[in-house]
Image (cartoon, rainbow over all chains, first blue to last red; front, side, top):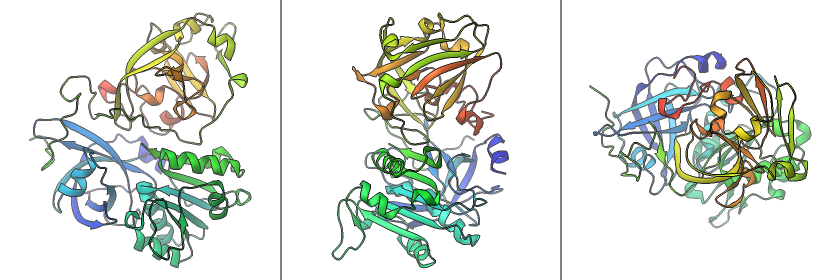
Length: 244
Length: 202
C-alpha cells in the first residue's frame, strides 16, 4: 500500500489549520484538515510550500507527527532562530489559515507494523516528531511489538510531546529522556550527550534484532548510529532521517 | 487566483530573485547539511578502490594511489539538495569522469553509481561526461570528511544532490536504466532541480 501511495503523482493541495497546540517552549503542533487525505504510514513526511505576495516560493519538509488513525494530519514545528519558514509556522500561522502541501512522501523511513521485530527509536530534538506518529499508531493498533525510545533534548522545556510520551510509558513503552544542557532539580533521567555507555544501557540489545529508526541533527545521529554499530547492530537494520 | 500564504514575506536571502535558486529551494548559506539513509561507512583509503564495470569490454579499476595520481581538476559549483537547501560556490577537487570513462570501451547509455553501505543511484551516462561530473576526494582544500562522503564521492551538480553518491566505489554501466535506492522509493528518475523533478511524476 505504501509503495502504491508513493508511486502516485504528488500534487499540491490546500490544508486548513484546525488547531494549534503547544508542544514545547519553541514547538507547536499544527493539526491540519486535508480533504481526501488517503492516509500515511508513520515516519512519512510532507513538503510545505509557502508563497509570498510577490510570487516568491520556498519549501520545507516536515515529518507527520500524527498516527494514520487521527482525523487531522499533524506537523510539529520547532522554531529555528533566524529561520525563514519555522518562525512563520510557529508565530504567524493562525487557526483557519491555509497551507499548501503535498504528501505523504517517503517509503523508507517508516515503521511497518506487520513485522514482529522489536523497534528501537532514537530522537534528537524535534527529530521526535515522526516517532510521535509511530507511538500513537503502535497504541492505536494495540501492537505487541516491544518499543523503546531514547530521546535527547536540550532541557525539559524543549521536550516535545511530554504528555504523550508519559502516556506511552504508562502502557509499557520504554521511554528514556536525556537532557543535554540543563536538568531540573531532582532530574532522574540521563544527562549530557549520548555516549557509548548510555547507548548500551538504554537501547534494545543487538541480539534481540531490533529495527532501528534514528531521527535528529547530524551530531546526534552520527553518535548514536556509530554507538549502535559498535554494539553489533547490522548497518542494514538502522534507518536514519536527519536534518542540519 | 494563485495561492498566497497569509502573512508570509520570506527572507530577502542573498540569492532570492537572482535566478540562481531553483524553484522551491533556499540558500543554506555557510551550513552544509548532512543527509544519508544509514550509518556512515568508514573505508580506509588502503581498502578503497574505484571500479567501472557492467557492459564494458574490459572493466577498469583504480586503487587509491592510482586514483590520486590521475590528472585532477578543481571545480566550484552550486549544489541543490532535494530536501530544499542549496549551497552556492562549493569548492571541490577530484578527477573528471571524462578521464575515468576514457579507460573503458562501452556502448552503454546508463550508469548506476555504487557506494559503500549499499547505496545506489542511477544516471544517464551522458550526464556524467563533457565536464559535468567528477569523483571528488577534497572539499574546500581538505580531505573529504566521511559524513560528506569521504574518502570519495560522485559530484554531479546539475542534478539534485542525492545523485552525487557519497562513499562511491564504482560505476556499473548498462544499456537499460535501472532505478537506484531513492529512485526505487518514489524519487524522480532523473532529478533536474531546475524542472523541480523531486518525486516520480514531477
